[in-house]
Image 1 (cartoon, rainbow, N blue to C red):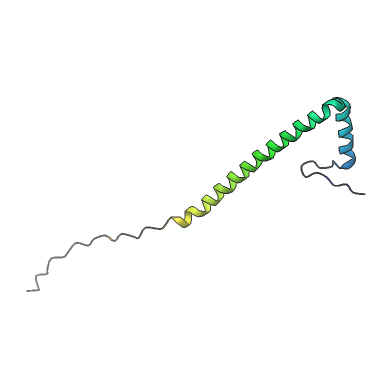
Image 2 (image 1 turned 90 degrees about the vertical axis):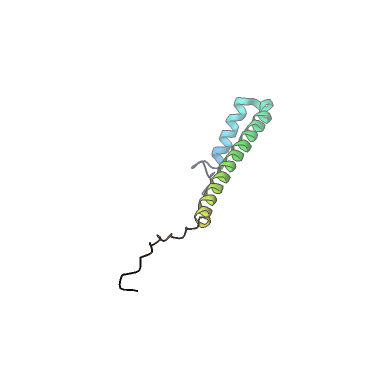
Length: 92
């Protein structure tokens, strides 16, 4: 028999979560449980929002790095001017 685990908590499945919820119920009581759940939900929402913001910023930075080399065009090589040579003495 296998139990599904959460991505960030290995080894914690359904029975373990039920036990944790029971302990939380004993500690906080039935009156404070909705308030506790609301606060936990708000915290998780803020955490996901912050993580998403960091991920978006990282992707944007990576896109900028990929675009810059294509935008920079090499400058053409400048040839050094060769001085004019005076006519040779053999030419008249």
